[in-house]
Length: 168
Image (cartoon, rainbow, N blue to C red):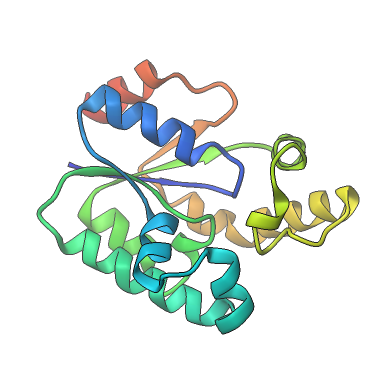
């Protein structure tokens, strides 16, 4: 079984993904960490040195490799992964996709408490710019996210409910 968690940065994909993987006794994979391993650089460095287009190409190649593998896993994808190179279709065809739907305001609140320097799309933004950017990304990406097999409110979801719906 392959499970892909999608949603905006700060929606809880990694946190929930680890809990879901434990509950299902599956390995957890963070696609951004896999990209960093493959490139030998942080996501921030990749964006800075080689720009977003290069990052999206590497992301797509690695995602395609995971989709075509025989392995089972729970994967946290980057927020933009479903929106490029037909990645959403690849994930839907090879496993189950879960969209963690969280409001722009809640994501902005969460991200303000995190290290924004680690998030290239938000690194140099003021709090007002951050919320505007999140709302913009949400509007641009929602058509992709809504193609997920399952949609959960990311601020209220329980692991038990997710496991029940995914395996039911």
